[in-house]
Length: 218
Image (cartoon, rainbow, N blue to C red; front, side, top):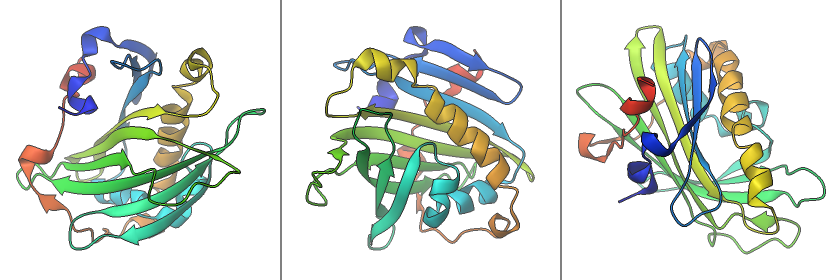
């Protein structure tokens, strides 16, 4: 069972709520670092959100604290892609390198898209200038609500590695979903994201991990 399936809303805390966004933080078994669940109602079609997510070159404009993001490898057929990300950390902490594999699935009946994220920290040799994030698990779920709106669910847990106190990381854990999703709301309005992206999603409803319905009704 994946971490996304283990998260129980009964143990989570609602940290932020407004007219378009809710953010929860959740304890993770065997970890001192909290995960988060961000749920947003976005006034843009689903394909605009997908186009933005697949525009790696634009990530530094909207993904919180991201200094660099680049494609390392496009995997064959519908097996996803490997992506490198460099994230700024506050002084005196070292910046973090994150290497993830993302893989997309779509439910052909509901059109919900699920993009699974998991770390592959050994894909590149370690760079002594940065700290390599040893573990990450997360996902994007994008469900169309109307032709011009969608629900976006962003879930993530990171073991940041290196010397960083859990209490410090947990204080700031809602910054990532808040700023990232707020920036997303603005970015998806750009003309270049109005053209649907061509992505090789697997058609597999059984692979789409939801487990977020309870957070929507909180």
